[in-house]
Length: 117
Image (cartoon, rainbow, N blue to C red; front, top):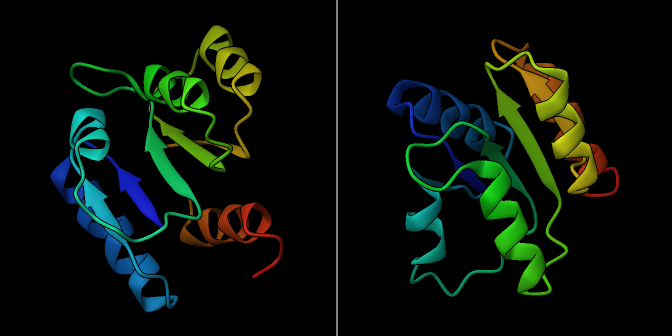
């Protein structure tokens, strides 16, 4: 499980929540950090903030798609724009969660992404 979120407190919160739920979590503060990761572990799902400083979450998803990745993505965002929601849907996101969201909503989205785990 990977989480890409530039807000340090939100990143820690999600990381802790997922760890309590039994997930192995890799945390990244930017899209570039995720792309440059040196981990050999297989990421099976990603929680991805849309609004990141340089490369956006939407751009990262596009880059992963060009790399033939079908990694399930759960977008999280504070943006409430229909155009952004549509762009996320066109990129094939599993869920689009508006911050702040209840923890159980994120866990349910991850469960759906992983086929009911």
